[in-house]
Image (cartoon, rainbow, N blue to C red):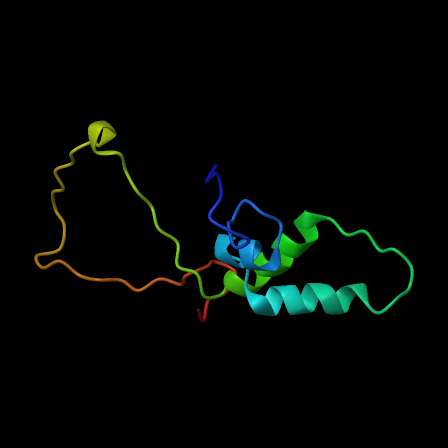
Length: 98
C-alpha cells in the first residue's frame, strides 16, 4: 500500500533505516565492538546505541536556536557598540575547541 519507501525507511530498525535517521557508521561499529563476540544472546538497549552516536556528533554538531515569528519580542538596544560585531562561540560547551 506504499506505507514505507523500502528497507531504508527511517522508521524501520534496519541498518539502512537508522543510518537515514542520523546514526553515524562509526557509532554502529563502536556499538558492535562493545558487544564482543559471543555465542550467547546479548541484548542491548537502543539508548546505548544512540548515546554512543551522541558522543560522536556532539563535538562537531552546531547548536541552533529559533524563535517563532508570532511570539517574537522586538527590542531596542541603547548604549551599545557603534559597529556590530561577530563573536565566535564553541559549538558545544563541553568541547571548547569545537
